[in-house]
Length: 306
Picture 1: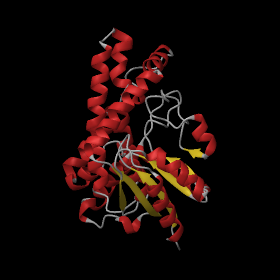
Picture 2: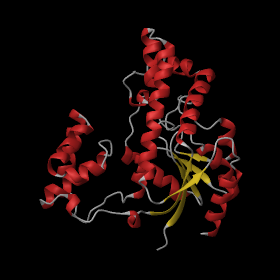
Picture 3: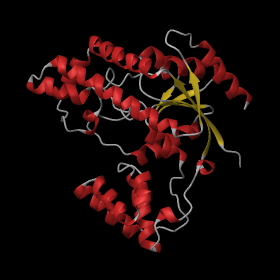
Picture 4: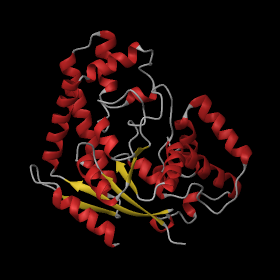
Protein backbone atom coordinates (compact mmCIF):
# COMPACT_ATOMS: atom_id res chain seq x y z
CA UNK A 1 0.00 0.00 0.00
CA UNK A 2 1.30 3.43 -0.93
CA UNK A 3 2.24 5.52 2.08
CA UNK A 4 0.65 8.88 2.70
CA UNK A 5 2.83 11.83 1.68
CA UNK A 6 3.72 14.23 4.51
CA UNK A 7 5.57 17.40 3.50
CA UNK A 8 7.68 18.96 6.22
CA UNK A 9 9.39 22.29 6.81
CA UNK A 10 11.65 21.70 9.79
CA UNK A 11 14.84 23.10 11.28
CA UNK A 12 16.17 25.33 14.03
CA UNK A 13 14.32 28.12 15.77
CA UNK A 14 14.23 31.51 13.99
CA UNK A 15 15.27 29.98 10.66
CA UNK A 16 12.20 31.19 8.78
CA UNK A 17 9.92 28.14 8.81
CA UNK A 18 6.71 30.15 9.10
CA UNK A 19 7.70 32.47 6.25
CA UNK A 20 7.92 29.43 3.98
CA UNK A 21 5.11 27.31 5.36
CA UNK A 22 2.17 29.68 4.89
CA UNK A 23 2.59 30.38 1.15
CA UNK A 24 3.48 26.71 0.54
CA UNK A 25 0.36 25.57 2.38
CA UNK A 26 -1.85 27.98 0.44
CA UNK A 27 -0.40 26.92 -2.91
CA UNK A 28 -0.78 23.21 -2.18
CA UNK A 29 -4.11 23.40 -0.38
CA UNK A 30 -2.33 21.93 2.64
CA UNK A 31 -3.13 22.11 6.34
CA UNK A 32 -0.33 22.71 8.84
CA UNK A 33 0.45 20.20 11.57
CA UNK A 34 2.56 21.99 14.18
CA UNK A 35 5.66 20.14 15.38
CA UNK A 36 6.60 22.34 18.34
CA UNK A 37 6.72 21.19 21.95
CA UNK A 38 5.76 24.65 23.28
CA UNK A 39 3.13 25.83 20.81
CA UNK A 40 0.83 23.09 22.09
CA UNK A 41 0.10 25.23 25.18
CA UNK A 42 -2.68 27.80 25.41
CA UNK A 43 -1.73 31.24 26.70
CA UNK A 44 1.93 30.87 25.73
CA UNK A 45 1.92 32.83 22.51
CA UNK A 46 4.73 35.39 22.46
CA UNK A 47 7.55 33.26 23.83
CA UNK A 48 6.72 30.35 21.52
CA UNK A 49 6.61 32.49 18.34
CA UNK A 50 3.16 31.06 17.72
CA UNK A 51 1.51 31.88 14.38
CA UNK A 52 -0.61 35.01 14.65
CA UNK A 53 -4.43 34.84 14.57
CA UNK A 54 -4.32 36.20 11.00
CA UNK A 55 -1.85 33.52 9.92
CA UNK A 56 -3.91 30.80 11.55
CA UNK A 57 -7.04 32.10 9.87
CA UNK A 58 -5.37 31.93 6.47
CA UNK A 59 -4.36 28.25 6.75
CA UNK A 60 -5.86 25.54 9.00
CA UNK A 61 -3.50 24.61 11.85
CA UNK A 62 -3.48 21.43 13.96
CA UNK A 63 -1.63 20.42 17.15
CA UNK A 64 -1.65 24.02 18.34
CA UNK A 65 -3.14 25.58 21.49
CA UNK A 66 -4.81 22.40 22.73
CA UNK A 67 -3.25 21.97 26.20
CA UNK A 68 -3.49 23.96 29.39
CA UNK A 69 0.01 25.07 30.46
CA UNK A 70 -0.30 23.09 33.68
CA UNK A 71 -0.60 19.81 31.78
CA UNK A 72 2.29 17.48 31.02
CA UNK A 73 2.70 15.97 27.58
CA UNK A 74 4.96 13.22 26.25
CA UNK A 75 6.59 12.48 22.92
CA UNK A 76 4.49 9.35 22.49
CA UNK A 77 1.30 11.34 23.12
CA UNK A 78 2.34 13.75 20.40
CA UNK A 79 2.95 10.86 17.99
CA UNK A 80 -0.53 9.46 18.59
CA UNK A 81 -2.30 12.83 18.42
CA UNK A 82 -0.39 14.11 15.40
CA UNK A 83 -1.01 10.90 13.48
CA UNK A 84 -4.73 11.20 14.07
CA UNK A 85 -4.59 14.73 12.68
CA UNK A 86 -2.46 13.67 9.69
CA UNK A 87 -4.87 10.89 8.76
CA UNK A 88 -7.74 13.38 8.53
CA UNK A 89 -5.87 15.84 6.30
CA UNK A 90 -5.62 15.44 2.55
CA UNK A 91 -2.29 17.30 2.29
CA UNK A 92 -0.51 17.59 5.67
CA UNK A 93 2.35 20.06 6.05
CA UNK A 94 4.47 19.39 9.13
CA UNK A 95 6.08 22.57 10.48
CA UNK A 96 8.36 22.93 13.50
CA UNK A 97 11.70 22.33 15.13
CA UNK A 98 11.15 19.59 17.73
CA UNK A 99 13.33 16.80 16.42
CA UNK A 100 11.97 14.25 18.88
CA UNK A 101 8.49 14.83 17.50
CA UNK A 102 9.72 14.16 13.97
CA UNK A 103 11.47 11.02 15.17
CA UNK A 104 8.29 9.84 16.88
CA UNK A 105 6.34 10.24 13.64
CA UNK A 106 9.06 8.43 11.69
CA UNK A 107 9.06 5.24 13.78
CA UNK A 108 6.36 2.60 14.06
CA UNK A 109 4.38 3.24 17.23
CA UNK A 110 5.18 -0.26 18.50
CA UNK A 111 8.51 -1.28 17.03
CA UNK A 112 10.08 -4.72 17.38
CA UNK A 113 8.67 -8.10 16.39
CA UNK A 114 8.34 -9.37 19.98
CA UNK A 115 4.89 -9.49 21.56
CA UNK A 116 3.89 -7.40 24.56
CA UNK A 117 3.46 -7.95 28.27
CA UNK A 118 1.08 -5.66 30.12
CA UNK A 119 2.56 -6.49 33.53
CA UNK A 120 6.02 -5.33 32.44
CA UNK A 121 4.61 -2.12 31.02
CA UNK A 122 2.65 -1.39 34.18
CA UNK A 123 5.78 -1.97 36.27
CA UNK A 124 7.77 0.62 34.36
CA UNK A 125 4.91 3.10 34.16
CA UNK A 126 4.68 2.84 37.95
CA UNK A 127 8.41 3.50 38.20
CA UNK A 128 8.01 6.56 35.96
CA UNK A 129 5.18 7.85 38.14
CA UNK A 130 7.21 7.35 41.30
CA UNK A 131 10.71 8.41 40.19
CA UNK A 132 10.33 10.04 36.77
CA UNK A 133 11.05 9.04 33.18
CA UNK A 134 14.80 9.35 33.71
CA UNK A 135 14.71 6.48 36.20
CA UNK A 136 13.14 4.22 33.56
CA UNK A 137 15.68 5.40 31.01
CA UNK A 138 18.43 4.58 33.53
CA UNK A 139 17.17 0.99 33.71
CA UNK A 140 17.47 0.78 29.93
CA UNK A 141 21.04 2.14 30.06
CA UNK A 142 21.93 -0.73 32.38
CA UNK A 143 20.74 -3.48 30.01
CA UNK A 144 20.76 -1.93 26.53
CA UNK A 145 22.95 1.20 26.34
CA UNK A 146 22.80 1.26 22.52
CA UNK A 147 19.01 1.65 22.56
CA UNK A 148 19.16 4.06 25.49
CA UNK A 149 21.52 6.31 23.55
CA UNK A 150 19.04 6.52 20.67
CA UNK A 151 15.93 7.10 22.77
CA UNK A 152 15.24 10.28 24.72
CA UNK A 153 14.15 9.77 28.35
CA UNK A 154 10.87 11.56 27.58
CA UNK A 155 10.05 9.04 24.85
CA UNK A 156 8.71 6.85 27.62
CA UNK A 157 6.63 4.59 25.41
CA UNK A 158 9.58 3.40 23.37
CA UNK A 159 11.94 3.25 26.36
CA UNK A 160 9.48 0.92 28.07
CA UNK A 161 9.08 -1.06 24.86
CA UNK A 162 12.86 -1.60 24.70
CA UNK A 163 12.88 -2.80 28.32
CA UNK A 164 9.90 -5.03 27.59
CA UNK A 165 11.70 -6.67 24.65
CA UNK A 166 14.79 -7.24 26.79
CA UNK A 167 12.83 -8.83 29.63
CA UNK A 168 10.84 -11.07 27.29
CA UNK A 169 13.76 -12.25 25.16
CA UNK A 170 16.91 -11.71 27.20
CA UNK A 171 18.33 -9.96 24.13
CA UNK A 172 18.71 -6.16 23.86
CA UNK A 173 16.46 -4.51 21.33
CA UNK A 174 19.59 -2.97 19.77
CA UNK A 175 20.75 -6.46 18.83
CA UNK A 176 17.58 -6.91 16.81
CA UNK A 177 16.62 -5.14 13.59
CA UNK A 178 15.79 -1.54 14.42
CA UNK A 179 13.33 0.30 12.19
CA UNK A 180 14.83 2.66 9.63
CA UNK A 181 13.44 5.35 7.32
CA UNK A 182 11.98 2.66 5.09
CA UNK A 183 9.77 1.57 8.00
CA UNK A 184 8.30 5.04 8.56
CA UNK A 185 4.50 5.09 8.35
CA UNK A 186 4.58 8.07 5.97
CA UNK A 187 6.38 9.15 2.82
CA UNK A 188 8.20 12.23 4.11
CA UNK A 189 9.30 15.08 1.87
CA UNK A 190 11.31 17.23 4.28
CA UNK A 191 12.91 20.66 3.87
CA UNK A 192 14.95 22.93 6.12
CA UNK A 193 16.33 26.42 5.65
CA UNK A 194 20.13 26.51 5.57
CA UNK A 195 21.18 29.91 6.90
CA UNK A 196 24.79 30.86 7.67
CA UNK A 197 25.39 30.23 11.36
CA UNK A 198 26.10 33.88 12.22
CA UNK A 199 22.93 34.95 10.41
CA UNK A 200 20.86 32.40 12.32
CA UNK A 201 22.25 33.61 15.64
CA UNK A 202 21.53 37.22 14.69
CA UNK A 203 17.95 36.25 13.89
CA UNK A 204 17.69 34.54 17.29
CA UNK A 205 18.86 37.67 19.12
CA UNK A 206 16.51 39.88 17.11
CA UNK A 207 13.57 37.60 17.76
CA UNK A 208 14.18 37.68 21.52
CA UNK A 209 14.22 41.50 21.41
CA UNK A 210 10.97 41.45 19.42
CA UNK A 211 9.37 39.09 21.93
CA UNK A 212 10.31 41.35 24.81
CA UNK A 213 8.94 44.37 22.97
CA UNK A 214 5.73 42.44 22.27
CA UNK A 215 5.15 41.79 25.98
CA UNK A 216 6.79 38.49 26.86
CA UNK A 217 7.48 39.67 30.41
CA UNK A 218 3.77 40.42 30.89
CA UNK A 219 2.87 37.02 29.44
CA UNK A 220 5.11 35.27 31.97
CA UNK A 221 3.70 37.32 34.86
CA UNK A 222 0.14 36.53 33.80
CA UNK A 223 0.85 32.80 33.71
CA UNK A 224 2.43 32.82 37.18
CA UNK A 225 -0.23 35.08 38.66
CA UNK A 226 -2.82 32.70 37.22
CA UNK A 227 -1.42 29.96 39.43
CA UNK A 228 0.97 28.19 37.05
CA UNK A 229 3.92 26.71 38.92
CA UNK A 230 7.39 27.81 37.75
CA UNK A 231 8.25 24.10 37.90
CA UNK A 232 5.57 23.14 35.36
CA UNK A 233 6.77 21.38 32.22
CA UNK A 234 5.59 24.28 30.07
CA UNK A 235 7.56 26.81 32.15
CA UNK A 236 10.83 25.08 31.29
CA UNK A 237 10.59 26.50 27.77
CA UNK A 238 13.11 29.10 26.64
CA UNK A 239 12.10 32.58 27.70
CA UNK A 240 9.67 31.44 30.37
CA UNK A 241 12.24 29.70 32.55
CA UNK A 242 14.60 32.69 32.50
CA UNK A 243 11.93 35.32 33.13
CA UNK A 244 10.18 33.50 35.98
CA UNK A 245 12.82 34.62 38.54
CA UNK A 246 12.35 38.20 37.32
CA UNK A 247 8.61 37.99 37.96
CA UNK A 248 8.86 36.09 41.23
CA UNK A 249 12.00 37.44 42.87
CA UNK A 250 12.94 40.63 41.06
CA UNK A 251 15.99 39.18 39.31
CA UNK A 252 17.66 41.62 36.86
CA UNK A 253 15.69 41.73 33.61
CA UNK A 254 18.69 42.56 31.40
CA UNK A 255 20.58 39.52 32.67
CA UNK A 256 17.56 37.30 31.99
CA UNK A 257 17.22 38.58 28.44
CA UNK A 258 20.91 37.98 27.76
CA UNK A 259 20.53 34.46 29.12
CA UNK A 260 17.52 33.79 26.88
CA UNK A 261 19.56 34.81 23.84
CA UNK A 262 22.52 32.66 24.85
CA UNK A 263 20.46 29.58 25.59
CA UNK A 264 18.39 29.98 22.44
CA UNK A 265 21.54 30.19 20.31
CA UNK A 266 22.81 27.01 21.98
CA UNK A 267 19.43 25.40 21.38
CA UNK A 268 19.51 26.35 17.69
CA UNK A 269 22.95 24.78 17.42
CA UNK A 270 21.68 21.52 18.95
CA UNK A 271 18.71 21.55 16.58
CA UNK A 272 21.04 21.95 13.61
CA UNK A 273 23.13 19.01 14.77
CA UNK A 274 20.01 16.88 15.17
CA UNK A 275 18.49 17.71 11.78
CA UNK A 276 21.81 17.51 9.90
CA UNK A 277 21.92 13.82 10.88
CA UNK A 278 18.65 13.20 9.07
CA UNK A 279 19.56 12.32 5.50
CA UNK A 280 15.97 12.76 4.32
CA UNK A 281 16.05 16.53 4.75
CA UNK A 282 16.65 18.72 1.72
CA UNK A 283 18.51 21.84 2.83
CA UNK A 284 17.60 25.13 1.17
CA UNK A 285 20.46 27.69 1.19
CA UNK A 286 19.17 31.12 2.13
CA UNK A 287 21.19 34.32 2.60
CA UNK A 288 20.02 37.14 4.90
CA UNK A 289 17.89 39.63 3.01
CA UNK A 290 17.37 37.32 0.03
CA UNK A 291 13.79 36.78 -1.14
CA UNK A 292 12.06 33.62 0.02
CA UNK A 293 10.09 33.15 -3.20
CA UNK A 294 12.66 30.84 -4.92
CA UNK A 295 12.65 28.50 -1.91
CA UNK A 296 8.87 28.50 -1.79
CA UNK A 297 8.67 27.79 -5.52
CA UNK A 298 11.14 24.89 -5.20
CA UNK A 299 9.12 23.21 -2.44
CA UNK A 300 5.86 23.65 -4.34
CA UNK A 301 7.35 22.32 -7.57
CA UNK A 302 8.92 19.25 -5.97
CA UNK A 303 5.88 18.50 -3.86
CA UNK A 304 3.71 18.66 -6.97
CA UNK A 305 6.00 16.60 -9.18
CA UNK A 306 6.89 13.76 -6.83
